[in-house]
Length: 242
Image (tube, rainbow, N blue to C red; front, side, top):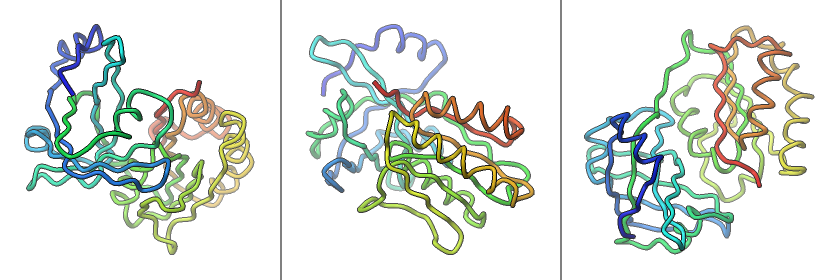
């Protein structure tokens, strides 16, 4: 794709000294009818920025009228030695999904690195509690890898059938939850089941990454109703439901 005019968002990121790169598709795979995986050469990105768990980049797209749109995606299996990484797209309506559906080897995309970061929980949690969905699955995989000795309970909205995951049945309990009522069903399941999980662990760490409205509601519940300190909670909305 050609260079995207980035508007005010691009101007703000430039003022914040964000770093820009052009990445190229090298492989494309349809994992399921609604999930597509791309492998990219990084245009020097990893050598310039380094790598950390749950690392993400902003990708730039334009609509039919040339208006800019940016979306954030987690890097999958980043390899600084070869200068490559993967991207995984949960396909739905939207400019990013439209681009991913037709992306082929040789296609390029502009990427900006700004705002990403990872602080390893200190002390290391005795139990990881996560709420995720198909959009945040790459980040969840990265987190499970980073906390590779920590037991985990995960509420996952959607089906993991056919999707790559890095859970270990000996240490990770995955509770699949169908998406219903714009995330309300997921929130109800977590509210009903999370207190029991929290009561059985001395030093948990809670990680919430699903649609923005559900993430905010659950983060507020975890802080205010269950009393989890902010230092032991990470919550980030990964997409906005229409």
